[in-house]
Length: 324
Image 1 (tube, rainbow, N blue to C red):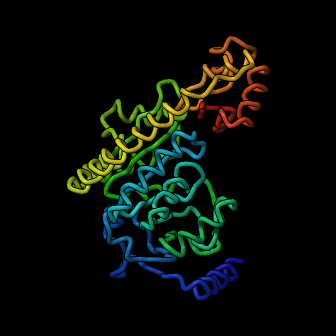
Image 2 (image 1 turned 90 degrees about the vertical axis):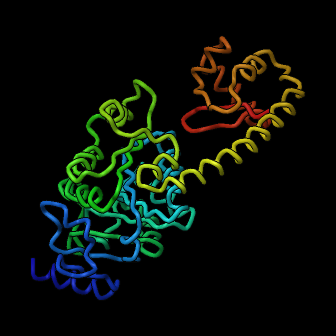
Image 3 (image 1 turned 135 degrees about the vertical axis):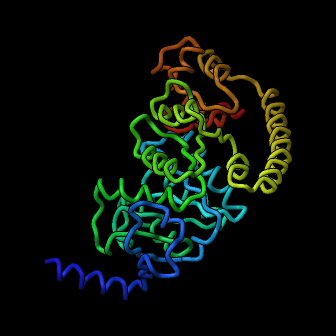
């Protein structure tokens, strides 16, 4: 059986034109040699040159909130715009958002797998797997055809940490696997940063503890660029952000002014719901119901009607915001 597996792996290497990089090969990433157990061989599919760039790992929970997904995408696209390669683990949640963020600005991204480079995991991520293979780099120490396994994911985390010059944790609960990447990063003297999350939110407990224990605070991509010695790029990004923020603020004010001139809904319940909504932050239907002093089912029905009328926009998970 093992002999057949090796034969199939060799066929896959030829079919997909995979690079096979033993530890003594000049293409082997020098940063990995800092590990006490560097992979004996790497299998790579894609742009090997991305490993020569400045690299940042972006990691976090698979069960990410929309806040976490948005933050990961923002951070990844922000640093990738300045030529930084984004490294992550191709898992659901934060990893996926990080890879997509880098790809969205035609930046470089490396997916380190807990399976063979020919095995998309999760299966729902097959499209992203192929995107990274075409435009970025897929990397694994496991023979092609190796199925995903929990122990493999733990092992691949050391590679993510070693390849990166800094590790950014976006959203992670107290027992997140992403924190093992941090442990490796600290052993390797890599910079560790974290995005602050709401106090009391379980999905942010681990990342918030990192901040308490001394990790650098990352509020925007420029903070990450500062930590990896790209302060000039960080300053440029802040200047760009300040300019766009003023334009966004102006457009928000214009929308609010226009909306203030709209007549409130005639129905008293609809009017109460409309007035209870926030302009920018989507609120859960239960919060809106409490503000409007109506029962939640009544609020849900009324909000759906307001959505049809174009007065309300729906967010994720029965959240709504006012648009006019």
